[in-house]
Every structure is written in structure tokens, then in C-alpha cells.
Amino acid sequence: MGISEFILMSLLVILAIVAVFMRDLLAATVVFMVYSLVMAIVFTELRAPDVALTEAAVGGGITTLLFVITISKTARREEDD
Image (cartoon, rainbow, N blue to C red):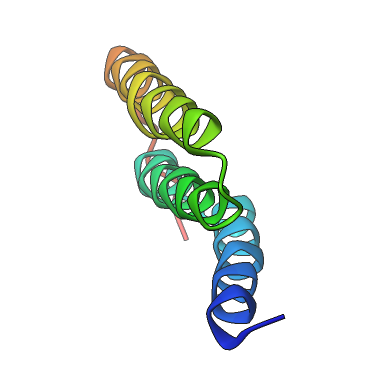
């Protein structure tokens, strides 16, 4: 395993943990989009360009767009600390 693969896999784990523990849904959606794009890079490194393109289009594009539209149509509640 090369250093670039180690960095990409570490970044994927960090992004997954950050996305789970984010309190703001919009910020978690952006982190999820970055996760999907890094995953597309991993698929490219694994020499699977068709899977990488699908992951970038569906995971990074369409799913993120649907999440943002859904979040914008819901009401936000402010919690008192």
C-alpha cells in the first residue's frame, strides 16, 4: 500500500466520522459530497473509471442536490443552549 492510498483511506475514515457527528445538516451534506468525490478518486486509483464516474455523478452530484433541496424545504429549529 502506497502513501497516496493510505492518505486517501485515512481521509475517507475521517470524513465519515465527521459527517456522522456534524450537528448542522447542510454542513454534513457538504462533508458527504467531499466523501463521495474522494471515493471517486479511490475508484480511479483502482482503475475502475466507470465506477468512479458513477460515484462522482450520483454520490457527489445528484444525491447532494437532493439532500440540499430537502434541507431547504424543511424548517430549522434553533435549540437553546
